[in-house]
Image (cartoon, rainbow, N blue to C red; front, side, top):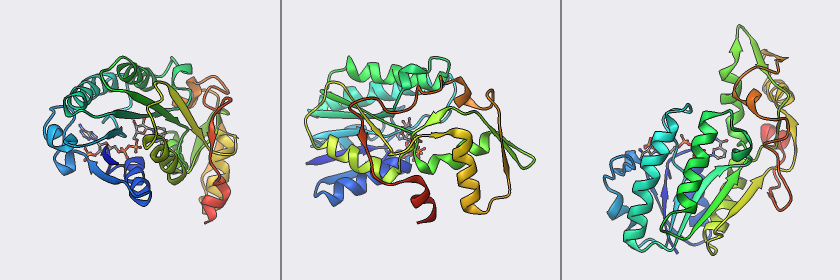
Length: 244
Ligand SMILES: NC(=O)c1ccc[n+]([C@@H]2O[C@H](COP(=O)([O-])OP(=O)(O)OC[C@H]3O[C@@H](n4cnc5c(N)ncnc54)[C@H](OP(=O)(O)O)[C@@H]3O)[C@@H](O)[C@H]2O)c1
């Protein structure tokens, strides 16, 4: 199967390219750095020529309300080009629980992006993953001040990006779902505890203070971001990944 992976140089996109390649597919990464810009459409038609499947793992330059403009334009250009190229399956990478956190502008933008796929011209699959293990450092950086990380007790069920990428690759190689499939890791952690586990494993001397108002995850209802029935659960456990 010939796959075009938009955002295929990014954190998850590069792993999806590797997982597809390991499974014997012909996967090519595309991004601005390879000459494809979803905002202008530059390079898009040649990138999609002959592709059976398109996987969208792009990211907005900002995670605020402006991300809706990025996803509206980028997704519109991608789906129109995929239709013109005769692509048979368009796969969007999204986030578990994205429609359960209306208070977050970035999540509202991802819901808009999902709706563009669901109403678009190409058979589609929405693949929602939980937060990647690799993302925990960035989450902590947002609310670190003078050696203290403030975080709420919001429950997360993080997933190793390599595991998520293999699951995305398998779904992309199958038939369009015309719906949603969730992917999550095997364990649930309160976010403040997840940070404590991470800092302890690294010998990082920052301390974690529980603060129900700190950072964007404070906006999420306590269990909005964890798995529901039917979720594909992956195997790698967080502490094993940290020390591996
Ligand atoms: N982080 C998480 O925990 C998580 C969890 C679930 C789902 N997701 C979803 O996964 C997706 C990817 O996240 P990520 O963390 O892997 O992002 P990332 O590492 O920032 O990678 C973003 C990719 O998009 C490309 N890109 C950005 N603007 C572009 C444009 N105008 N045209 C073409 N390509 C463009 C980037 O390459 P260039 O800069 O070279 O263009 C890069 O390849 C996001 O949609 C996110 O919502 C993330």
